[in-house]
Picture 1 (tube, rainbow, N blue to C red):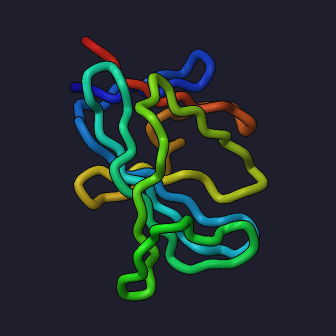
Picture 2: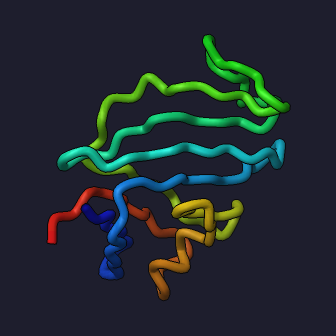
Picture 3: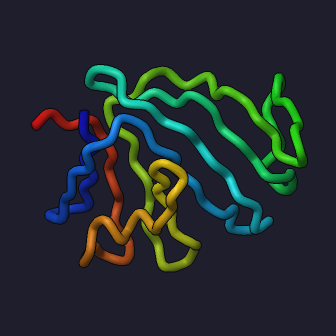
Length: 124
């Protein structure tokens, strides 16, 4: 399985079947994380974590607090595409693979400062 990334004319493919998206909340400066898995032709979220709470980031009902981190499973159906805004006004998303994280934009060198990054399953 592979994950395809695209922003305009810039694209990349990663031979992975699971990954974590993470970002820092623009106001509260608290880390959020989402674990995703590729199943068939869709992306499926398996767990999410919030490393605190604050303005607009209350943990959803059913969340469990472990070691200061809220864990929960989002009620989101499988997605054919996940769209993320890349902006110079907030910290960027990170893509974590097997525990190693790097900026998502590093996988798409030369993307526009106000790009929409699309993630989807890709079949070689």
